[in-house]
Image (tube, rainbow, N blue to C red):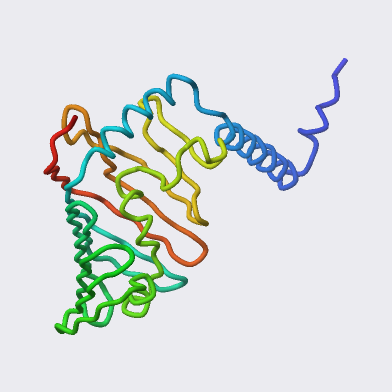
Length: 222
């Protein structure tokens, strides 16, 4: 006696393939959701506190990076060099915008911005002025912490689904202020400090990718 083939095998190939794809996508969505919603373990939070303390103890630091920015259907690549001395930031941007280079010096509340033609302006709203020069609206007040793998709010004030830590207590993903950040790799910069090597930051309007090639720490670790 020959048994009839299961219903799935008797379906037309196109329908069967569609069902398989739907099943796989559903499983992937469940896995992704479970991964994002899983709260951090006690060990991860303990490792995070130690990691955070080492990073926040750094007063003076700098990095050199390659940057790729996309806004809508336009984009380009360039570089971002950053030097931090206490509360004062000095950023040098080279990219596809009109003047080719922009330098920013000051704090997130007040900055001197100089373009590639030597024109300088002081602004108490550097975010708006940077957007005017480049077309990129970037939260400079948060960026100083984000590039080091730190949120601007304490983890305890974020929902578990808004961040994810790796086994060494470092940020892998962060959702904050309508931005999504992912940290794919870290580099050991000293015996106690690991800092991001690859960062992606995006919102509805802008996507920024940074590959940080070189970190330099001026402050000694505690």
